[in-house]
Amino acid sequence: MPVRRALRPFAALLATAVLGGAVAVGVVALLGDLGGDTTIVTQTVAASTSDPAFVGAPMSINEIYRRSAPGVVQVTSTTRSSAPNPFGDRFSSPPVQALGSGFVIDKAGHIVTNYHVVEGADDIKVSFSNQDTVTAKVVGTDPSTDLAVLRVNETASALTPLTLGDSDHMEVGDEVVAIGNPFGLDRTATAGIVSALQRGITAPNGYTIDHAIQTDAPINHGNSGGPLLNTRGQVVGVNSQIETGGSSLSGNVGIGFAIPSNTVKNVVAQILRTGSVAHAYLGIVGQDITPTLADNYKLPANAGVLVATVRHGSGASKAGIRAGKTHVVVAGETYVLGGDIIVAADGKPISSIDELRDAIAAHKPGDRIKLVVLRGAKRTSVRVTLGRQPASPQG
Image (tube, helix red, strand yellow):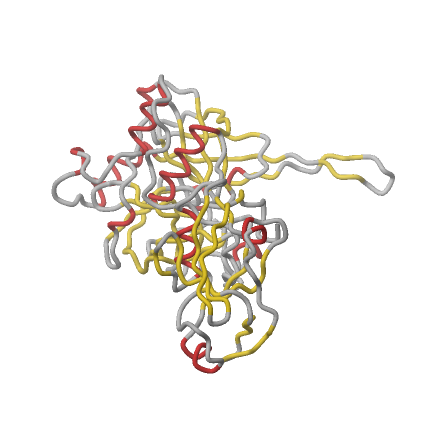
C-alpha cells in the first residue's frame, strides 16, 4: 500500500498534472463482442447497480463479507534482479516480494489488482480462500491509474466474481467495507464511511488519478488492490493508497484512497480488448485561475485554465496553443501569465484543471477536441488533435 507522504511518486499533487487525461468515468461499453469466455467478462465489468442480486435492503458487514470474501485473493509478486559488482561481474541479489490483494471479476479467471503490486514482477502467485495458490499471468497494466488485470487458470466453480458498482452514486457518509490482506493477514474486513469524494491522487508514473474515493475504513500495506464495497456488496473502488500525515509510521491513520469503480470499468475493458490502455494527451501544463489572481492582474476571465507550458511536439503545440512567460507570485503560489486561457472544451465551460482533464479523458488518442481560449482580450476557437499520453508527465 503506497504511503502518499513516504514515497516520492505518491507525494502531494502538483497543479500541473493536466498533461494527459485521466480515465473517463462511466464509459464501459468499449469491448463489444469478444466471444468465448471474455464475453462473460464484458457483462461482469459492465454490471450496473440495478443487478437483481444486489437490489433490496443494505446488507450487514457480515453478509457482505460472507458473499464477497471468497472473491478476494492475496497477490504475491516476486522480483529477481542482478547487479554488477566492482569487478564487472554480475551477482544475484535476494528476491524481493510484494504483497497485495485483488479480486475476481469473472468466471474466465480475470483478477483486478494494483499496478504497483505487480510492477516489474518476474513471478506472481494468487492465493484463494480455499488455500489454493496458483500462478497468475499479467493480461495488461495501466500505470496511469495504478491498475492491473491478471489471469489465472482455475475452474469456473473455484471462482467467485465480484460485481463492479457505480462509483458516481456514492455520497459522503455512505458506509463501505474493505476486504484485503493487510500485513499478510488474509481476507481481513474493515469498515468505515466515504469521507470525501473527487480526490486527486498520484499514480505510480506521476499522472493524476481523478475522482478517487477517500475513506476512513482502515487499510494498510497488503490491502493494495483489494475491493472497497458498498452496502449492496458491489465494488465501488480499488484500495490503493494511504495518508500518514507525514509521520515516520506507515500504518493507517484513518485516511485511505480508492480508485473509483467507474474508472476501473473503463481501464479493465480496454485491457481485456487490447492488452493495454491508451490515454488521450493534450500536452500542456496548466494552472487554475483564482478570483484573487484575476482581480489583481485584471485577467479577461475569473475562471479557466492558464497555459503555463506547452510540450514540444504535442497536439497543443501543433495547434498553436500559446504558453505564458510572465511569472508572478500570489499568496505564495507562482503563476505564469501571458499565455492562452482555456475557458471551454467540447462546448462546455472549463473553470479548472480537473474539468479540463475530464474533457480530455472523454476522448481517445487521435480525436479532435475544440477548445475555446482567451488570447489577450480576444476569444478564439482552436481544434487540437489529441496525442497519446507519454510514459510520464515529463514527456
